[in-house]
Structures are given as C-alpha cells and as structure tokens.
Length: 530
Image (cartoon, rainbow, N blue to C red):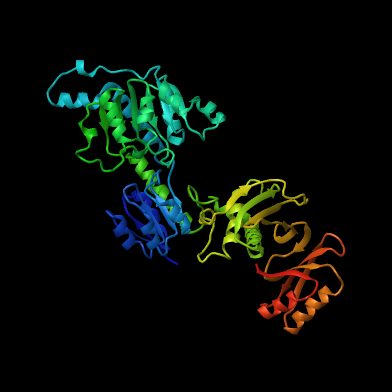
C-alpha cells in the first residue's frame, strides 16, 4: 500500500527528506488552501500536515475518505476540529516540544521590549529624532510576573524570569504542588494573580474555559499599570476589553504576537496605540524551531501511518504502539466483555463502570475502558468504532463512564470487571481474565462463577437447575443439525437458577431459539456472537 500525504504549508528540507526516503509514501505540497478548497483536495489522502493558517473543519474531515492522521506542525490545534476528527477515527497529533525554546525566548524579548520601549524608540530614531525623555523604562528586577498556564513554554519562561530575579506566580489548575516546588513557582488563584502581577504572560491552551480569560472583568481586577504579553493564542484575550484597558491606562502596555483574527487587519485599533507592540505570530519562527517542528511532524506522521508509534497524539487513549501490542490480549478481552454486555442488555446502556486489578493492567485503565466501550458500541452502531472515536460516540450516546472499585471479590492475577446499567433500572456485572497471559476467559456473570472462552456463536441461557434440561436443549439442537462445541454452566446452589454458555458450530435459526425458549425450565435465552 502507498500512503498519500498532503502538505499545506512549509516543511523543513530535512522533514521532506524523510518523506522522500519512505518507499511507500508519496506527497504533494499545496499551499493557500481554504476550508472549501481543502475539502475538494483531501479525498484519497491518508495523511495531512498543516500549520496554524489552514483550517481543518468538519466539512474537510467529512470529505476525507481515506484520512488516518492529521499532523499539526506546532502546538495549538484550535484550527482543527478535533472532535469531528475523533468521531471519524482520525488521529490528531501535534509537536508540543519543538517550539518551546523559540516561543519562550520571544516572550522574554517582548517583555524587555515593553519595559524599554524598544520598537518605539527605534522608530523615532529612524525618523531623525534623538528623544530620550519620552522613553523612560522600568526593570524586570524584583518585579512579579504572573504566568497563566505552566506547561512546557510557561515553565521555560518562568526559568528565564527567575534569571532576572523576578518573583513568579502562576495560575494553572492542572499544576501539582510537587511540580510547582520543582519549578520554584507559587501557585495562586486567577484573581490573586491578577491582583498581584506587575507583568502577565499568557501560555495557556485555548479551550472553552480559557477563551477570553483576559476580559473586562479580569482587567478590572489587575494592578494599575500592569503589562501584558500574549504569545499563546489570540482568543485568550478579549481584544475590545484590552483596547479599553490600554486607552484608560489600567494596562500600561501590551505585547501581542497572536490575535483573534490573523492576519491582523491593517485598520485594527491595536495598531493605533503607542503602548502596544505587535509581531506577526513570530514566536515559533526561528531557523532551529522550524527545522525541528517540520522534522518532528513528518516522523510522527510516518510512524502513525505505519502503526509504529502514536506519540503526541492528542485523541488516543495510548500513544505507545509497543504498549498497544503488549496490551493487545487484554484490549481484545475488554472488547469481548463490552460486546457481551451490549448483546445481553435488554435496553440501551446508560452507564458503564470499570474496575481492573493486577500488576499487568493496573496502570492501563484508560485503554481498557476504551476497549470495553468499543465492544459495547460496535454491535449497535452503523459506523466503524475504534479506539479514537469510541469515547466520543459513548458520550454522544448518553453513556456515563466511570472507574470504580468493589465490583467483585474474585482472586485472579489480573481481572477486568465491567458493570453496566440500562434504562429501566437493569444492570449486569461481567468479570474476565487471561489465563497464562493469552487464554481469555469469562469468569463471573453477576453472582455466577463461570469458565467460558468468549468467542464464536454462544447461546446464553438462564434456566432452573433441574434434571433433563441439558438433554432437552441438546435434542433440539441435534434435530436442527447444530453441533455443540462446549457447554459451561454456572450455578449458586443445586436446584436454583443457573446460567449456561453453549458454544455452537453454526448459526442458530429463529425457530431454534423459539423451540428452546418453549422448554418449561427455561427462563431466558439469548444468542451472542463474540
């Protein structure tokens, strides 16, 4: 098979060299694509490499009949409809580390330029004016900088600022106390940061929760004369509120590398303000960064296309292909558990609870849960369900998913347990394990202990444990020339209710099920295919 890759922007020569060396890959470079023209171009391509200027919309993804991977040469993926990609099972990957140094250094250059009015003084001098009095500056020394978002870039900016003897405070809900101590930064609330910071640097990802994190309300809480730097994403800032703050003097100055709409319009009010420094999204524009980001995204794309590795994939439950291969028996077992639950449930499943035990799988609850969801959804969906879209499809279907404990007391080295609930109050718990790390077994259904290989066509019966039941079922199957491969029964007590898993070698016709259902001792019979 030959993989076709579409590249919509500049990629380093070294990155293209890796594509040239791949014997099963061909590529095209087409620049200046709009969402409409990209939608027309994308059919037939397996890989897509973009930067920030190209929008990968739902329309584009709907037209992408062969697309497997979208590679973003850069960090932010707000120009990619990740949810739509995930729903279609398309991997989205970015390069979060390649631009770190360049972006952090650009942030510091803008901070210094703000303090010393470098662009304004340069422009005045170029105009023939020797004006020193108009450009009295301030120092970074012993000032407080508030960094919103303490990821790779924010952490590096913090380190640089500490080199200027600045105090670093940060707002990042995902920053642990341990990492904060290692970085020598002080975690605070957003309101505390706004009130204390002399400088504010934005390094947060753009999400629904961070859009316009700097707005009129936030600006009102800032110290008078604060200075703001944004090298992250334009929509983090409400530009209208920022302009008001700059005009009023509440914000002494701002340095912006990113904007709500790019390119920045020539008639933007930001360009009319003397206390604003603007650069045209240059933070990642260094020779080293562009070479690194181009090389990294090509290598990531090639590995993902060949199922070698999925590093930096933002919508996969795992990124290590070696882990995928190692965990494959457990993931297949999880799918079987989910599929059994779906086929035995009376109504639409609304809740899924998962518990795992054992050293081999204890750290892999996420991919195992996704495997269970894949198994639950595959029998009832009219589309392909995979490890990328299963969580999104479950959410869209109204299924609540949680990790839990206390579902069972079985003693196995490694055990996967799943409880589902469906509309009307019904529920079922299924436990499964691998014997010798390769032999899949269902070991418990609700209160019944069993030993069932989950594969093939299986009749699942609930019946009263009385003499003659097995013979009656066997007689009916024999009359229709259906061979029994295995029969496994679980019961809690003699004469009580029993569950049987009857594996057969051929399809079971409706009239066979009707005949078995009419057996006097029968409570319920289902057919499942695993």
